[in-house]
Each structure stands twice: as C-alpha cells, then as structure tokens.
Amino acid sequence: MTRILVDFDRCEGHGLCEQTAPEVFRLDDEGELHLIRDEVGPEHESSVAAAARVCPVAALKVQP
Ligand code: SF4
Image 1 (cartoon, helix red, strand yellow):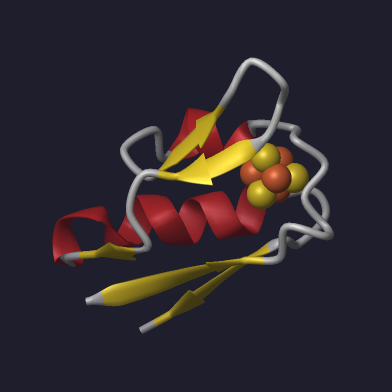
Image 2 (image 1 turned 120 degrees about the vertical axis):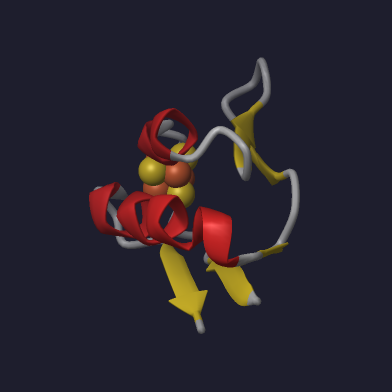
C-alpha cells in the first residue's frame, strides 16, 4: 500500500491533484481539499505519484 500525506498548511486548493487522481483527492465547494482515502493499492500508485509531482506548492508526499 502507498500512503498519501497532505500538508494542509501548504495546500492552496489549486485542484491539480484532483484532476490527476480523482479517486483520491476531492475539493469541496470552498476549495478545501479532502482525501477520499489516505492509502492506495498498486493500481493507483502511479496516479498518486503524478498528483504529488504536479502540486504547485509541493503539499503532497507519497510513502511507499
Ligand atoms: S494540487 Fe496541491 S495545492 Fe492544489 S489542491 Fe492538490 S494538494 Fe492542494
């Protein structure tokens, strides 16, 4: 399993993570980020890693 860590203090609600991995990240109407799950199996590892790369403020970390 891959664990997803979010630094909510850094997150500015850009939503690129949601576009990249909508199975994990969801922004609410206020622009607040929510994790649908904080661990994913191998089938979602690459999309979660891609979301961490596209976050413009480096708020996402992925722990294998
Ligand atoms: S891409 Fe980064 S800044 Fe944007 S909502 Fe996701 S975690 Fe927050």
